[in-house]
Image (cartoon, rainbow, N blue to C red; front, top):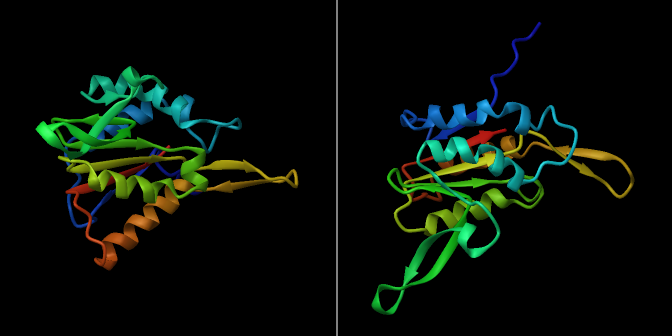
Length: 185
């Protein structure tokens, strides 16, 4: 009988670098909410907001600022460009951030699985000031109901991991991060 894969799955890039000490506690936060967010066992739809809400207390306990709602007060914004008098003129919303460690965190679900959100997250996080690390949380399995009545699955974690492996292996697109952590939930 094959040994089950550890859950959650995760990969740290570049592969020739030891993962920083903050990685294991972050992965443990995800593991602690397995019953709520493990997409390869859940049958119903799971949104990125639901995943973030389930993980928020643990993330906040590690020092992350986490999006708490859709109002301006609940958003987490980080600066990209500054204008006159040092005022931020362009900011991006992120799902979470740990400013002391320079981490930006993005949690994806349906759009991440179907719409290449991982690419968008990598580019946008690359433009945010003072970001040293990017954390991408992607579903292991995202089920899509087709118009035909059939259901298909997308492994967004695998796709994001493969994308990052190609980026780091090819060296044609240098990223401005010390590292990228992708977690499959």
